[in-house]
Amino acid sequence: MNRRDAVKLVIRTGGVVLGGSAVAGALGGCASSRRGGPGKIGEPIPNDPSVARAPASTQPWELSDPAPTSESAPSVASIRGVISRSKWARGRPRPWLADPMNGVRRITVHHDGMNPFTNSSWGGAAHRIEAIRNSHTRKGWADIGYHYVVDPAGRVWQARPLELQGAHVRSANPHNLGICVLGNFERQRPTSAAVRSLEDLIASEMHRLRIPLSEVRTHQEFAATACPGRSLQAKMNSTRSRGGRLRRA
Ligand SMILES: [Zn+2]
Image (cartoon, rainbow, N blue to C red; front, side):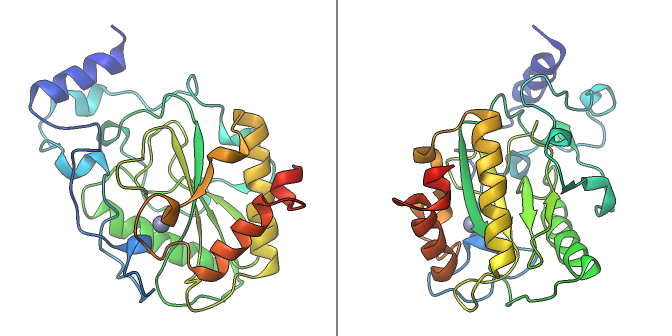
């Protein structure tokens, strides 16, 4: 048994469900209403294992749990142009509150589902991503639920470390890489810069992590949600269809 397994055993012995699928939670964030109303910052995306965590402050594993390693997933540093998490996040991830990813097998695309967002500045995007991270960690989660965020200018931001399982699709978080495009695409259209960056990022991760196109999904392909919004869903349909950029990637 390696150290991380030992850590998990301690947690499970305490009666905590870490697998994710057994954890129920209120819909929120990108999983907001079917009609695409803005989600509230502060509502959880279901299934972060941390929702059912044990009280953390006195657990023996809190201080001894090592930072996630890159053994099970290649480091994000190998993707060019990705803004590292340390450039925007005001808090560190808490890896003891999440399961390890243990390999990526699929990619899921989201919008943030809040109010429409068109700010193309670095600071504007950083502020919004930090607000999402804050809303998630205030619920006791390990970190922001997604692994990458794409902003209206087409920047790609590293979010939750890829070594950690995400919290973005009810019952389908294991091995699932989550990408969130900032904005509400029920109520606005994604910029061409954002769409192009999203396609490039997905194509890059498909190659790097050996994920087939059939495993590139959107949130609403798993669950009854408006996410990622009708206009981004249309873009995803088109890019995956014959002649689309991802189909040709
Ligand atoms: Zn979503």
